[in-house]
Structures are given as structure tokens and as C-alpha cells.
Image (cartoon, rainbow, N blue to C red):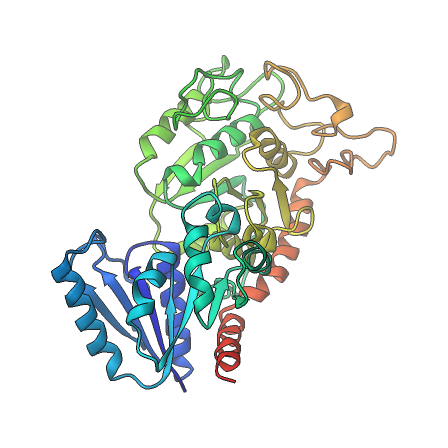
Length: 446
């Protein structure tokens, strides 16, 4: 078996790259590879991903990420030479553009360099990442992306001849699935601006009929302009969020995670009239997340950008469908619109609200959406737009199939989407992802 060295800027912070790195490292180590995980810097708040690692862990600098002095750069070269010099031939998997640029010149020839990019092409092209990937990844043995769509886009637009795709793996596969009867929407992730949980709160409030009655002032929760769905006036109906047009029927939004935006998000929930229906759960240990998915019925993914969001795959493995903004190839690889979940245009909070409402309430009985059917959010949706009323002409009690936002049996629709989502998530089982890595190693050494 080969040596496999994974290198991260910081290997032990709570984050997606780190979680994937430790999961794959443990899996390959259990298959007999000599695996090492290297963090170039010490994590400020270390998180332990694997209780009994079968791989070896190393930290180069005892300081958090930041600029290197000349002395620190010399120490880094010396420490890496000591670490890698005694390893058998194999591969060095570099987890990000900054790590590729920093370590590729320092690697010995017996460790073949493979570069990962965990984000999407859409995100990369809006930052320095695309320039860095274009400048450095073509010199590696392989450039690895999280979806086939992203690999194709980088190949075409970054002119890379060496692309490969490997999805992020699920750490485990559950034996049971959610029954999808709980009146609970889940939002899972760090409470940080990029996750845009303000939009999820807005959409949830609108779906329940207690969303903003109009657009709020400029500024909003994240300093966004009006019309972005991030602010609104409290419902005139009071704090229980009910309107004359219908009730929320016990539905709650549970946000699982912690972060700097919590107080702002709490204020936003109050402004939307759903403070008592948005539950801030804080951080939940990874070992207990299964119980959370089993207690949910829909996952909402409202991020500004994502690579391959593992929370969607995890929810799908428990049979929980997702409503998501269509922000990347990785999201599209997991959420196939109308098949395994519902995709809506990026940042379209009204469409997100309509999609949630269709999975929460029977067609024709859902509370009116805040802005989906009328300018002031007080009236019912126009039956012609198919967002919440049944078509009486066909006698089936389903909403306009062209829109797909409501059915006579939303629980049945959740089950249909959830079953397909679980079947789709099979491709992200750890053993299949490990097979894909070993196939890559074999291709590189042919």
C-alpha cells in the first residue's frame, strides 16, 4: 500500500475541509495505507474528528494561520523535509490553493502532488482562487474537484488537462430513516454570513404566512439592500406568527450550529414574527447528529456558495429531502430538482419560501406567502401561478404540476423526494469514495 499525506492550512479547526480530510484519512488507513495528516498551523480551537485515528497527525507551526517570517519559513522547510524524507513513495494531497502554492515546491520527488479544491467553480471565479488554480494546479499529477460538473468547468475555463472528481464522503451510513412526520425544518452549519441563514428564516416565515409584510429598510441583517429578503416588519398578528389566512400548524425551524451571527439572526427572526418558531440549538456533537436528522422533515440550504455540502448528503442518507439555492455543481449533484429535492434560483427567497410551503402544507391550505402572491404579503397567491392552490379542473387535488410547489399530500411528497435522495446518497458512502481515491492513485502511477 502507498503513503498518503494530506496537508491542510489548519487540519483541526471545525470545518468542511478538515472533516473530509480526517474521514478519508481514517478510511484509507483502515485499508492499509500509511496515512499522515499535516496541519501547517495550529488550530485556535482544535476539534477532534476521529476518536481513535489509525493515521499520524503532525503540526508544523504552533501558531494560527498568518504571514510567515523568514525564520518561520526556514523552519517550515526544515520540518517538512524531516517529515517527508523518511516516508515511502506515495502521494501528497494538498487541500486548497494556498496549500498547493506553498507546499508544491517543497515536496520530495517520491511524493506525487495532487491538488484538491473543495469549493465550486462559481465561487472560485469570483475570487483569487480561480487565478491560483489556473496558475498552479496544472503542474500537479491531478487536480481534484468535488463534482463532475465542477471538474468540467475548471478544465474548460482554467485550462487544466488533469482534472478528476471525487465527492466528499459520508462518514457513516444510517440503518434507519426519518418518518418525515415531524413539523420541523432543519438548517445545519456555522452561523456565519456565508451560510445566509437570514434568508432561510425569511423563507420559513413567508412559508408560514408570517413573513415580512413588506420590504425592510436598507441595511438588513447583513447590510444588504432591500429586496434581498434579509429584513422585514413584524407581523401585525403578534409573536405567534399566525395570520388570518392560515396557521403555521406547529412547524418550527431548527438551526443547528453556532457562530458570530447568532444574535443578528435572533433579531431577524423577531422582525419576521417567528422568534418563537426559530429554535437555536447551538453546536451538536457529530455523534448525535443522526437524531437531529431523524427528527426533521426538510433541510434548508440557503448558502451564498457551496462546494459539495455534506449536510445535504447526510440529510439525504436519512431520507430527508432538501430545498436549496442552486449555487454549484456540487449542490446540483445532490439535489436533483423535483427528483431528490427542490432547487431554486440563487438568492430567490420568494421561490425558496414557495418550495418550503409546498413541502409543509397541502395545496390550497398553506398560509399566504409574504411576497409570493401579493405585493404586501397579505393576500393569497394567484391560482394562476401554481404556487399554492389546487387545480380544481383535474379533480386530483394537486397543485399546478408545472410549478411543483404544492401537493394534496405534502408528507407523501416529502417521502417520495426523501426516498430518491437516499438512493442518490449511496454514491457518497465512504467505501465508494475510498474506491474512487484508490482508482485515482492507480491512474497516477500507471
